[in-house]
Length: 345
Ligand SMILES: [Zn+2]
Image (tube, rainbow, N blue to C red):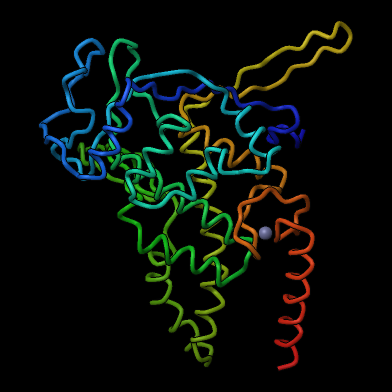
């Protein structure tokens, strides 16, 4: 059944997530420390037991980390799915974690804090409720860059060749930022140990610039053998390659980042109408965002930015580019005129 991947139909992603709980005045203190960039540096983030944390700074810099770490305590839970459904209904997509994540001000720790305060951290690493969690903001921003890279690539696929090229350019320029400590690089498989104990980071999907370098060496000689000028060959090949590699990379990352999810089967007992319903059990907000990304795209109607006003919105139709009918018709007209003018040239 093709509808299984569409969470708005039968499938559900089950995730109860936790927002942080702050002591009186603590959130304000964290904001002040982040704004002033003044916090103690420590060698390691030792467990912060709840009954001992009163006198310890809630923001630290851990040696080896490039950004501060914030201490948070698990608070009230909420359903990620309900939140996304409500955000869609109210048309205010800033209330939806994955849209909010994509639109964060990059490398602004206060904006990361606002996200964490609203939706909870991407992970709650501690399983013990008596211990607070240290959230490392360098990990947060690396994951942000990773998600942004795939999100940009995905949205560019609708917008054609130039947009895809721009998305790849962003990825090339921000590749270092997408590295998550302890995890494989973008487009790579987990580190493998082969025979001699040598560790390799194997490439699953090459970046276009890696693929280009090898291909460019071969293409001119192929073209020359046929007596052609090689410029056109390189251009056409690289645009097709950009799209093919983009799709491969999106598929690779979606699969990797949702690996920890399990499918559970819920049985609805309607006596004669007995139904088995798949429910994806997800373990972190991080995985949930990838899961929602993929589930929504199952219908072809994933959220996008309005071409006229820039607001994120859910389209009613596959070919919608704008969030209102008025904007859509003005956009279609000007787009049609532009295409017509281009043809006339
Ligand atoms: Zn609009």
